Image 1 (tube, each protein chain N blue to C red):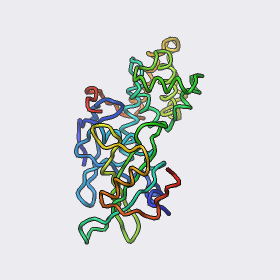
Image 2: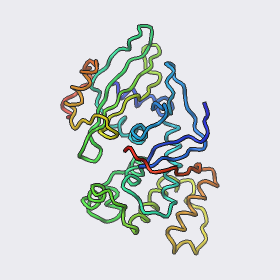
Image 3: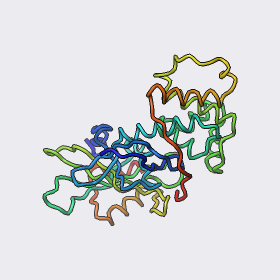
Image 4: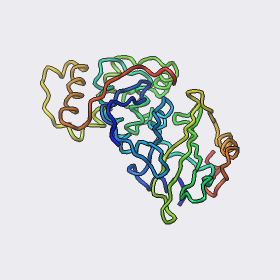
Length: 158
Length: 129
């Protein structure tokens, strides 16, 4: 069963999913398959990585879940102590901007680098991290590696 | 093979999360599904009320992913075909958010599962607590 413009909760927000495939199981339960969940999660991850905002702790946890990354690996990538990442999570404040940019690039490449890692990029983007990530996000959509999703609102109930 | 191993063996095409419609907690269930399938212990199983239904339900618990807080209590309905699982749907997910119960230990989760009518199975392993 295909549905259009469905709300989907992830990374502390509600997203609009333009097309969603729901399955009706033997007992009548309406459900999302793990394959469909993975597809939607990749699209949301692309949108998060391409946004100009600093990562929230919910988004960092989401990107870790989607890519199978743990916080020790995050700390190691940033050359930080594991306790620094734990402190970010405990305080629930956005990840500092420079670290956000590094993490978004890293996570985006984990998800889409195998398909788009050899794409040519305008050189002027190399000095501007947010613009490069915005470009990468649109490349993933334009190349039909993932879908465009939009943010509806922040979750209020989590 | 344990029940959780059987669920993993089904593959992502035949593992589902209930959607009716999605709530924030079931969004978290979808987000944590991979971890739940990897790290959970089976607490118990129960038969469905309908005798003709070829399905069972299992309760599982996974420790908190980042070392503290509540773990993830989940229940799966497992559809059977010729004695083997053919699909499974996560229909219950408690992690202490959204006013749901939260369980910090496998013992607490097991006590809750038993109170919900789940019988402990051979899968149950206190040594993982």
